[in-house]
Image (cartoon, rainbow, N blue to C red):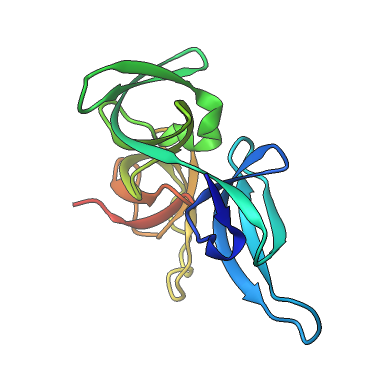
Length: 187
């Protein structure tokens, strides 16, 4: 549906130059000369590349409707991820490259949100954090504990994360899925 450019807000999905873009943030600029315009920071839905767009406030833009579906991750087969709709129990497959390197966080029966545009899955929202076991942790080097130093550790899913010196192999920790960082020791 067409909307006026000055009504664009973060979280909306718009069509620009034949591509679908997720709006990150907007600002209305009022230069000393000429009319006001809206500056939009956005991310390409297909490949994740960030870009900026600029429209006059009276221009019209195509807004796309996004439908969110609460789903459960079932399994990965080849380059396809299979999910189940929690309401209808329908199963569907999504290309694994939608998640890129974040697919390492997927666990059996994990609850996620799948975003659809015009019936096509375009993104998967993972939980903010997951609990994983540290399978390899370097020993603490004596004398490095005075300052807040971190050491490298390898998680059960193969990802590397910087962990505090008191975390040892076999310890379960909470990891942030957005930036692959240590949060806390799991309870």
